[in-house]
Image (spheres, one colour):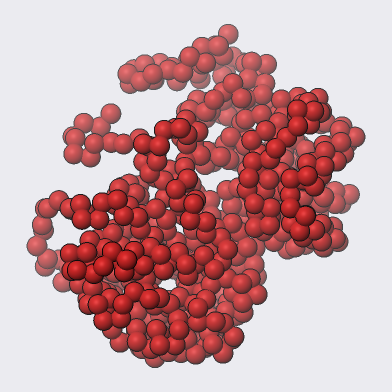
Length: 230
Length: 328
């Protein structure tokens, strides 16, 4: 079960590198490159976690400039996915995640899980943005469900907006939680990939109840909800 | 980190219902470099934003009772960098933190050793502006050991140090903290010595350290005394903070003290240094503070909705009329 082929991932990785080389200052890129050997050869994740934390110190946080052709390529490889509006720090972090050796599954899972465990807000954003391109994608379902429980807006948006992972991997129950949460937290549901495709009866029932609750409390109802009641 | 044992004194106080008037300092901006927001409410955030606080530093501290697993520290540090930072942003306040193992819990040596292992994972994170609050409580050998280890860490990471000076045996504890910092090769200009009083301030300033004062009712420093100290010592390398936490403390201590200083005839330049600029300069040595961020901090949730509406900066949380008995 995978959203994207290994070849597709390599293409994305290469494209990210092209963008990074263009957007990151030369000395920052040298610094980033100099850290790769250590994270590729270590058994534990100390160097990886320290590198991951320090990325914004070197890259800055400006919004990445993208070419139209680059957006097209990404969209062809992972429909709906976009790098638009990403900060340089987020882009570099996602690329670094793709540099972690994945041959040893246990070791790979442990490293990524340790990154999640000590992640601050922007690190979480990068981690959740990377869900569709991480190795062993079915192993991140729990992480994705956990992220949906977050109340931090940016983190929720990294999962909900332009991210094909939830629609592809979440169970019906978890998917429905995400959609309900999106309405609760007033997210723009039009950015959710698979919104119409994953409409289901239980979701419709829950949304109907939600509408009735809102109306009983004399609160407004988002018009988008009604499109999911079919 | 504080504890307030003057229960009797408090209980005997008159209950006064009055309205706070901060009109003297309207339009000024403040930086509270020591406040434990994790134990404060959204009402506090709202009041702080209204009073002009644009940025704060939350030092890692003791939570009132000892932790027993290293995972509790990991989650605490993560919450300072995650949830608490997000909460602050919803009120237009830029949140920074210092990360460290506090002196009380350094006395649990097995746990302290484990905490030391996870500190390197956190000190390089975005918005970590120092190692803190560290130093002495009881001045035990274990406290000494972990204070020194963390000073080495600060040196390696090139981060300022925020020193908690002890409640008991304060003068000696303060001197000893400075001696040890120098012994480990730290520059006094990278060390903020906190919780000063009339007895400690002179030596701290004479030796070139930053002197921070905690305006905290009953136990530490009152702001009338603080006014006298600024009159006597000026504003160079002096900063004030609230250290507000779960004790009876005041998250508006910095703006209130600014108002009192203004009424007491202290110049606006000096007030700005003591309540904003000095803290910023001291902790900006971390490379993690960009003053322009204070002006652009916005909620991630509502900020996009309100992006182009500058009126809402500093108050992105929906406002409620607290004087209304209607809650809707």
